[in-house]
Amino acid sequence: MSRMIGTVSRGLRAPIVRDGDNLAEIVVDCIMQAVENGDFTVRDRDIIAMTESIVARTQNNYVTVDNIAEDVRTKFGGGTVGVILPILSRNRFSICLRGIAKGCKKIYMMLSYPGDEVGNKLVSLDKVDASGVNPYTDVLDIKQYRELFGYEKHPFTGMDYVEYYEELITGCGCEVEFVFANDPRAILKFTKNVLNCDIHSRFRTRKLLKEAGAEIVYGMDQIMSAPIGDSGYNDKYGLLGSNKSTEDRVKLFPRDCQPLVEDIQKRLYEKTGKTVEVMIYGDGAFKDPVGHIWELADPCVSPNYTKGLEGTPNELKLKYLADNDYADLKGEELQVAIKEKIAAKTDESLVGNMASQGTTPRRLTDLIGTLCDLTSGSGDKGTPFVYIQGYFDNYTDE
Image (cartoon, rainbow, N blue to C red; front, top):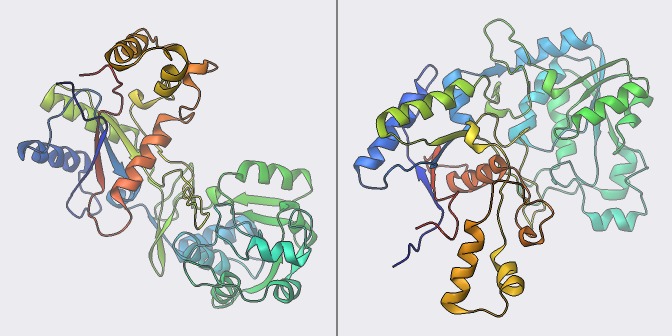
């Protein structure tokens, strides 16, 4: 009988890791224990992925509120700063905001509306439509915002983020005024010193600000991009990708991880004779159709991975072949024809080929990282490693 199982994604349980633990050794030991238990056997082109969080923990890649305050104060001089386009998040931004506030005398906090860049809503689209406001052009102050929209709370967290961020800032002894706008240049009416907190649009935002006359401009990716004393840091992403650890510190996105993924690949080859691809993953890249939140609050899905995970899928659409090229065939004859078509496929890109239309045009690491994020979850499953088999198989593989 032909093989009936395609791709399988397994969450692997792991011990609780601490700073300085040998993560490569732990990952390989967990895999080999699962093999000894009879859970699976290692095959070429399997994939082992680990959460960015567990990697950062072993690196002790943490920074405190005071570290952030010192860096902000050094870069901006401790005066007035426009803090613009942050996401609405207790986990992702609140502790960072406390550090920013401690490093400033006054903040002009500019929030995008009706929601942030990952889909968290300050106010519903229906209310914006009913208000007659044009969010692309209209700049609101706090009085106008409250008169138009009141105190609408986030549907999932129950938070009024305007009120929440105000309390965080003033609680650090910093003044705050709110601005609501979507054009980053709107902040320049209030201050020429700007910290842009957007994630995926950050380079464009900085370019627009500088061209419009901003004097000091830094992004979240440039705060804590170097260590302060013995603190953690991330030279590429700074505070982007950070998560709340305690009320006074955050865990940063991991750094310098290419040696780690290659070490794990090498160790597994030495133990099994198989080449397993290895990657680190954070948020998946998908959108919640109910809450309309785009999951990707990290600066990327995968910061480091082995070279076998480069590129995009190069696949043929089976239903296209069945409905078009082989519309006159059925049963075993159809299966044989489709398998022959797949077997004749080369490594050349299928971009523009109608037979590949409808296949997912995304990077392998984004697709696999999303699968891993959904497999491991974000709570108490205790499976920070994900082992995937059959991802690169196709209909012809037995």
